[in-house]
Image (cartoon, rainbow, N blue to C red; front, side, top):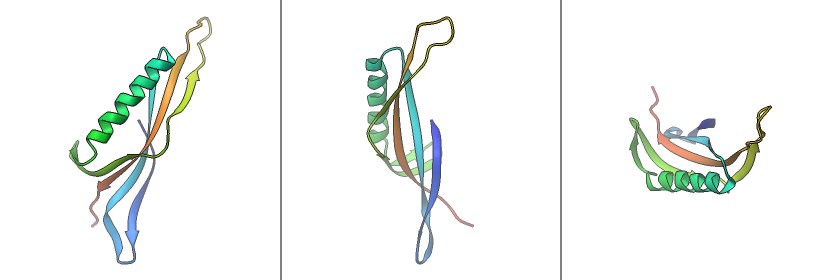
Length: 99
């Protein structure tokens, strides 16, 4: 995955103890169908674990930002095999602490 950006949640009273990160997950496979199936599995796994502690961090919510995006990697020189990519973007709202 790649963290695209992180934004602290703020309101008139100051910073709230939550932030939101936008993450991108690229699912690569040998066929378009396999890449899409992997993307579906990732999306369903994240939607099921949208609230609670993950790797020591309290997650408030995980939501899909937009629909899937599709691309492919061109074959390397001397090869005719392409890799198909299904890209998913998510917002992850998580608890933060301020000092």
